Length: 369
Image (cartoon, rainbow, N blue to C red; front, side, top):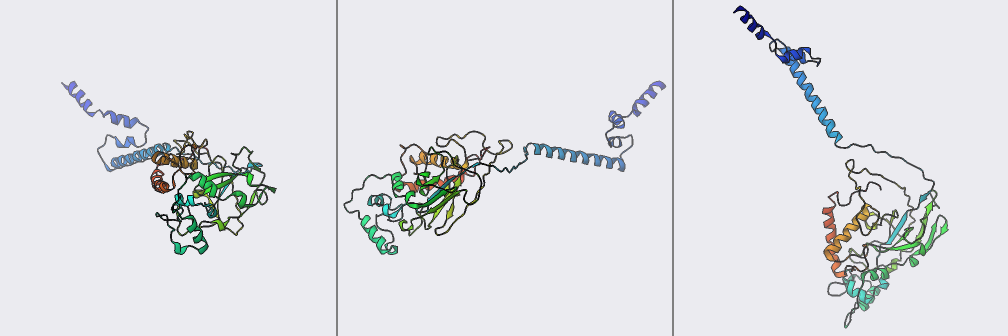
């Protein structure tokens, strides 16, 4: 009986396994939390400090894991002086899209309201604002009594009434060598008939430049032919109060988006423009938000945000109006937007793309630009 009682007394005084582990563990502080003593201030403080340390450790670990899944990267910039560079394309447009002397009676019948020259009743708009000589010409051309209209083509209208480079170009020099109107390629934009120098699309080799500065680039003297400007009494999508030239400098792989990215040149002034080439390589997902796949387009072979926007606008107009504007790319058999239906259809575009551009997947940056 005494031996059994002694054995039970020894089992009762044997410490718990966690206390044995704590007393032998090298983890700092754990031996002070699991002791043979009763709960005291010292033991409580050790438990508090230990739990606080574990909490801080968990917070740091979670923060580092979140940082890792943000896919951080380092931006590297290298400035390199190139001994030989391809000269960029230079596109310019006259802010007046149509020459008044080339507008015929048939043009006024079909596009007079679009040009803000006539109202919807084929009458001269605001005749009290028109100069006497202009009013007389408009009266003769806007006389539609017994008039039988002929077929009308918007592209032919833009091409025929747009300013001719042969009349506008007074002087042209590239790196001290004389150039001519044959060195410019016709291109249609929102400003109508425009011209691009060194486009790379006319079968000629791209021009190069050795260095910057005066005499090593393109020098132009232009006549904006302000006497040919349309009489404007209200600004519309096709007419403007302004006079001068709109210019955009871009690469040969990027189509001009001159109404959004161009800069104005006022008449009567000499304007100097300098530029630098930047080549940016963006990281594809998950490190960046750029586009890593080739552009799926029937119109452009090289991806750019400009090409993507023009492509989207063209597809939208073709799908919803079954036509396209003159400056939009596409097959020749696709009908151009008629003058009286274009305004209603095309004015949908800015509101639609205001919503679409909030989505970064519409026209994202490409990984190499």
